[in-house]
Length: 247
Ligand SMILES: Cc1ncc(CNC=O)c(N)n1
Image 1 (cartoon, rainbow, N blue to C red):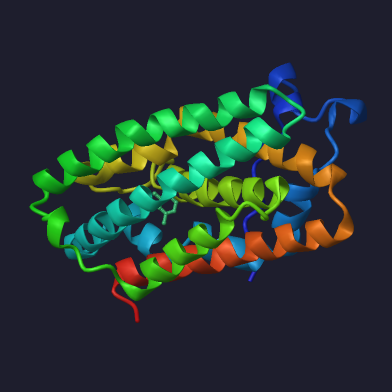
Image 2 (tube, rainbow, N blue to C red):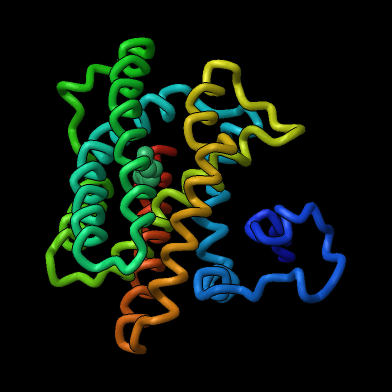
C-alpha cells in the first residue's frame, strides 16, 4: 500500500514565506518529531485514519458509535485536565523558554470550554454522562496518563505525549472537514472542535516545544519519549476501536 504523502503544512517556516519549495535554504530540517512520524508512519496512519474517523468522513457512521465515543471521551478529557496541569507544573520548573507555559495554559483554557461543550453535546444526544461505564481501553489510557503525571517523568517525555495526544485528534478530525468529505451535518461541530485551523496552530506550537526539548535530551530519554509516542498511538487506536464497536 502506498501511504498518502503528508502535506508540507508542518513546515511553518516555508508556509510563512508563502513559498512552494522555492529555494533549498527555505526548507526547514525535519525535527525529531517528523523523523519519528516517518519512521512509524503505519502506526501513525492507523491512529489518524482509523475506520471510525473514515466512517465519519464518508457519512456511514452509526450514531450509536458516536454516542459511545462522546460518553467515553468526556471521561478521558476529565483525566486529561490534570495531565495537562502536570505538564504546566513541569514547564514552570524545568523550561528554559517562558512561552512553553503559555502554550500549555492556552490548552488548559480550551479544555475548560471543552468540558462545557461535552456536557451540552451529551444533552443534545441524550447521553447521560453520570452513568457512563468506563470502558477498559479508556481505563488503560487514563492509567497511562496517570503514570506520566509522576514527578520523575521527564519534561520532554510529557511534552511528546501531549503533542501526540492532541495531534492524533487534530489530524483525524481535520480529515473529516476536507473537501470531498461527506461528514453528517450533526457531527460538523465536533469535527471543528479539533479539526479547525486554530487547533492545528496549537498542535504546531506543541510540536516546536517538543522538538526543542528532544534535541537536547540524552539518548536514554529520547528512547523513552519515542516509546511514549508509540504507546499514545496504540492507545488512540484502541480508543477508536472501542468507539467503533470493536473489542
Ligand atoms: C482519546 C482522546 N485523545 C485526544 C483527545 C484530544 N485532546 C483533548 O480533547 C481527546 N479528546 N480524546
